[in-house]
Structure formats: C-alpha cells, structure tokens
Length: 71
Image (cartoon, rainbow, N blue to C red; front, side, top):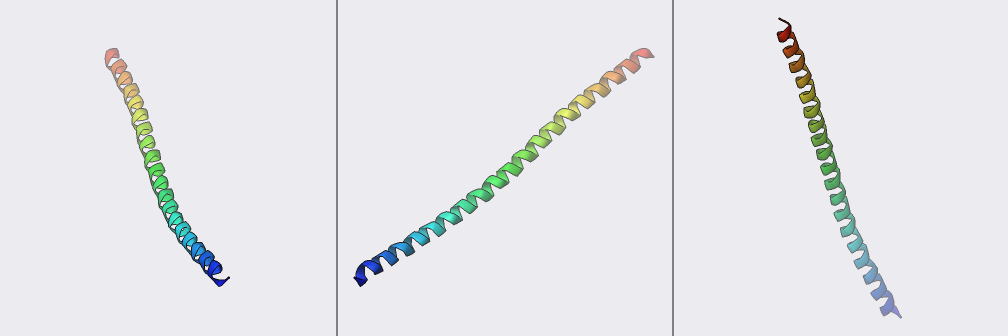
C-alpha cells in the first residue's frame, strides 16, 4: 500500500513543478503582452499627433496663402 502513495506523491510533485513552470511562462507572456500594448499605444499616439500636426500645418499654410493673396 505504501508504494501507490509514494507514486501518487511523486506524480503530484511533478504536476506541481509543471504548473510552476507554466505559471512562469504565463507571467512572461503577460509582461510581453503589456509591453507590446504600451508600445502600440505610443505608436498610435505618435501617428495621431502626426496626423493632427499635418492638418494644423495645412490650415496655417492655407491662412498664410490667403493673407499673401490679400496684399
């Protein structure tokens, strides 16, 4: 009877080790996803600023052209 219990305990220890390894991998992937999310948010913000900046620049150029034509 002692042998099946030892076998069960050994299996449970192996399972615990495998779960620990899996937890570490999931944590690593979670951090990677968070980094990628932050990078993508920053890139989107940069694109938004560039697009907004271009529209502001275009508006300024149009106003300047209009002022130059009034002279």
